[in-house]
Length: 461
Image (cartoon, rainbow, N blue to C red):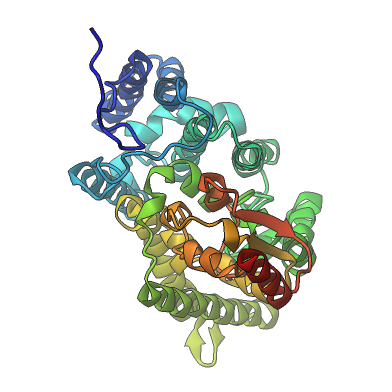
């Protein structure tokens, strides 16, 4: 005899147990993690290519299996029930444990790669980096490095957890298209194409071949060594040099004018891609207070100023063939501090390691200079905005809760005000979780005062 539920709660107060597919997903993912852990402690596998393939396939398939069990039998719509009752998504013990592990991984990755098995010179790779040698050799004909390992795992995370995200939001076309774009750009433009191009051009000195990366996020684009390698890189180097300048001066402003910063932050950027997929469980943790908003503005624009000063110093050094700027060593006082504190510690250690504690967009919100620059463009001359129909708002608060950028969306909706905020990345989740269709992402010139007056008059009627 089935148990009768007498509760009046809209959400299920007695959630069902784990589906067999969820359990299988956890088991499959554990296989991949155990292989990586075994490699990390020095296990030497005889068939590295096969073992690595099993590990990567396991890590990719695990979230897909988990998502099927969790969301397959749910009704249309986006379900976020219970996020404040789970340890992972409410800063519980599990969240703190994952935060510590992620932070530790980034510290080792950036500053202690030998602990991961990084070789050099006559010393061959070992450990987890050595495990990735077969894949690196297949793509570019060179042994793996810590950055190849990181890029591979980064891509696997976006693919697997992106598929999970798409299954959860499968009834929302915008989220499906946006996530597909993020996966495509990460897999193709950020990982496969650069690695293959390096393999096809082994004699060229290194330069960034990630076609989607651009200044100021790509902060070392204007460093002397990078510009020299581009200029000496033949047709390929000139292509990426021209593309890099065009993206900053032409492509980015035009796309931001028409579509807002979302074209990059939510559709293209790898940092945003990881935040949207791997960080989806933590989006509700973003601080919505006015104090956090003030800190956000001070920090993100300070970083933008710092990267601009560093770039000016770097360009001065390149064109004058000098190692100093205003009497200060360019590398020691400009490039190295920015690379350490912002490029590594902030964007990596804090930006990803603190997902379970501060939300999934902590880097994008407080530190990313690209988000700061695009935000200024979006606020002052972009056609993009989120329009609201205040008369339909029931003040449920879903929009504010799941805004990963800490915007109190409900406050705008209640007043019938359209949202034109520099920090908004246009992810569209606020609109997706709204039960009344109050919010709409639009590209077009709208008189905000007139729109607000119209909505108020409709509400009065």
